Amino acid sequence: MKKLIALVLSLALALTLTVSFADGLKIAVPNDATNEGRALLLLQAQGLLKLNEEAGITATVADIVENPLGLTFEEVEAAMVPNVLADVDYGIINGNYALAAELDNALLYENAESPYVNVVSVDEKNVDTDEAKALAAAVLSQQVVDYFSNYEGQAISVVEEPTDGYDPSVDYEALSGKTIKVICTLDPHSYVLEIAKEILAEKNITLDITIVDDYVTPNTMVNDGDAFANFFAHSPYQEDFNAQNDTHLVTIAGVHVEPMGLYAGRQTDLEALGLAK
Image (cartoon, rainbow, N blue to C red; front, side, top):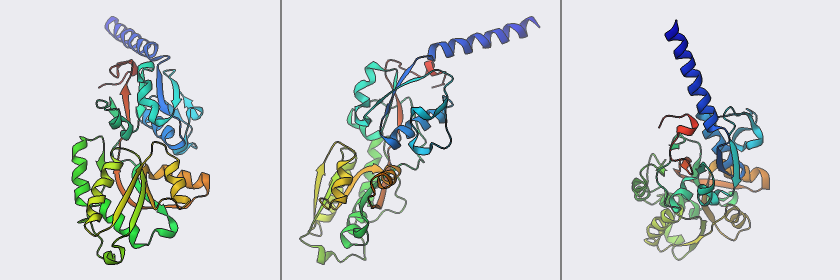
């Protein structure tokens, strides 16, 4: 009986220490609609909090209904999360921004089989054009699939049936001499498009690549007709953008997943959260 009591007291003490240690831990999360929800869902999957079921992928910290560890959150622009790691205990970062910041591997990742597939999008009126088909075939090529082997799990191709770079239904002779303008963000999006650029150049098609660093310009430029396509965001973000802005952007290619991860800040491991490595 004494041993049992001692064991119970020991477990209770361990739990108390864990909760005390975690209480007040600050986690930086992206502040845009779908990425903040995605970050909070990652924490929920680890049992660290519970969200209102009705919030879905656009959940914010206001939708947290259970927070047993008393976690606090700093909501910042997605691209800025790597920059605030020194001031928080952890940061939840999109794969492309972690790559750009040259961060070490995350302490934990969301499941790579996530719905957050990064997509190439065009205005709905262009979805069936030869330009769209040629661009899609180029970014879904075996060359692009092979390229993602460089990322060691930080970016993962989702292409199950790669092309040889071309679509047999496209009249490439009619496209010869034309330019396709695409707006994108940095690595890996811009690098994928560089591969596609070489593929299309073989057919005398110019891929004009413009790199930006925000999550609005690529959609507004395509919607306004200032660019033909964009490649920067995942599918849930594009769907939410359409709903919020009455735009009609359509996916022509789902290319890869960048698993969102929990990265070390002031804490160097998961012990403060009571999670095993």
